[in-house]
Length: 89
Image (tube, rainbow, N blue to C red):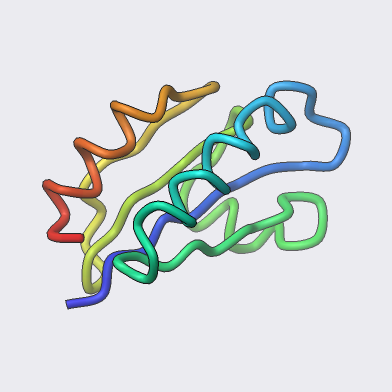
């Protein structure tokens, strides 16, 4: 099973810059147990619309194309880890 964390962000988004180091740490610590897809909403509006992203940052955790969890706003590491575990990472 593939677990994916979709990170919807924009370069002008201050809270997104707060979220980045949390995601980078998680990626390092969880070594390959999930994939991160960074989606710049300014460049990939079609994907943002498909997922109905209205606020940034938005994190969506999926496993094999089913959305397990959606977080809006800066999300703490523990909450992301719980959702990744629920998704099977």
